[in-house]
Image (cartoon, rainbow, N blue to C red):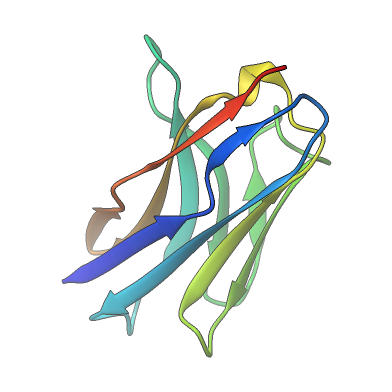
Length: 114
């Protein structure tokens, strides 16, 4: 089993920045991917960014150039630095880990509003 705990969400004005953190614990050896998904009201959950065990990354087109995913293996933590935030980035953000199956965190709310 893998446990994921997110932190760092909140309310920010358009153009602002936030950093999300996701701490992994449990059976973390052998995790293939870790990433961030988001789900806005009335919409399906979508991939935001993903990072592999060797730190290769990919991003959705909507966040490329604004968001950066990174990992600290010593802390078993994945980060999502979000810059130039837009109202359409408002969503619940979920941390994800893939090891034979998907594991999810509890989600953290990000609200971008003036």
